[in-house]
Amino acid sequence: MVDTFQKEVQCTLCPEIFEPVIEPEEGDNTYLIHCSSCVRCISVAGTNPVRVAFRDVLGLKGEALALAFQSVLAPCSCGGEFNHDAGKRCPKCLYKIEREARRANKSRDQDVDFTCPWNMAELKKSEAKFFEYIFQKVESKEENLKQLIEKFELGEMDAETYMEGLDSLRFRESTQVSVIQAWAMILGPDMAFRAAEEHGLVDRYGSRILVSIASAMEISEGKAVLATLATEIKNWDGPIERELNTFIAKIGGGF
Image (cartoon, rainbow, N blue to C red; front, side):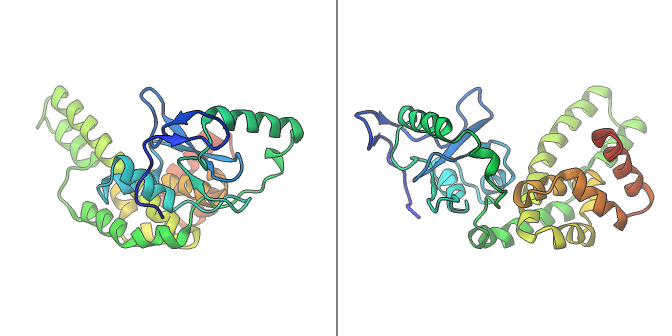
């Protein structure tokens, strides 16, 4: 893996000089990483669990974050590597190549089977750091949603303080859940749910953490969230089972 990016890249196909995109531009939620050999690309959300975990657990940002994320992507089906400089081809040339490829084979995208987007051997190198972060949060005395609601209902805080606390909690827990999702993708579907149960994540976050893990499995395994939950629900009873049933009924139309 290279340890830096060229700030200005000379396109190998035309005189254009371009700057690699390494994060979503202002006003955008995603950005693209192209294969260095063909025109396939991966759309990366700013909220991608692995990206968030690298940022908040490992403290990476900017170029270092982009390089780390790039290093854990699996090779393209063509054998090339996904790279932020797109194999030194500028966006205009990539657009032209992709347009011609679509004309030549309109069913190309439909024929591609799902493949895991991650180089798991590389991603697993961060497993211990993710684990440490997650369980520091589980064992910490940070206020959770249940405690916040109880304080408000007991009159220990006014409505404004409660809303401020709720906003802060949502932001804090969204990062924590993203790290859990990245960790779950490393563990895989056979271990992730049982690990969440064993280590008290369901007690802390409720059934929504199971939904979040199922979403992570969709990213890494390609199995639909509802199909995963329909299997996982058999391992639960009581309030968790009822909540999962409600989610599946509302989202899946009685899946």
